[in-house]
Length: 162
Image 1 (cartoon, rainbow, N blue to C red):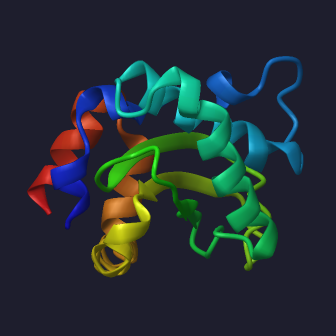
Image 2 (tube, rainbow, N blue to C red):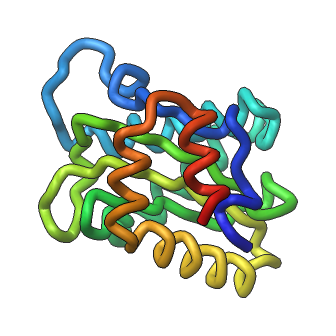
């Protein structure tokens, strides 16, 4: 499945930094955990996940992230986990123009965060989706366009063109 099939405007946060940082504008290792929670809140608000299941989903994502960072390189992170609180692969996109500390393997700030959750039964489809997202965001021009977009509608249009 491709990212353009999973996203809608309400599943995209363009000004992620202001949604994550409450007190300080400094990057910190807490960015990662706050970002994941913010994107799960997006899924809840969009009715992709029930509020009663939020903590269970967060724990699955945190557990996966503690095993190994999903902050890859080139300013991209793809936190993902299996949880049966969702019935199908679900995604949210966060864009942070100033960068977040996602403890990426290249040590650089992260600007684009795609959160993917999937039911345990959809492991094979998840692997294909993860590869598709990584391939899309491997394109420097697309990453740059997404970082510079002004709103979720523009971000969605960029993704749908690819």
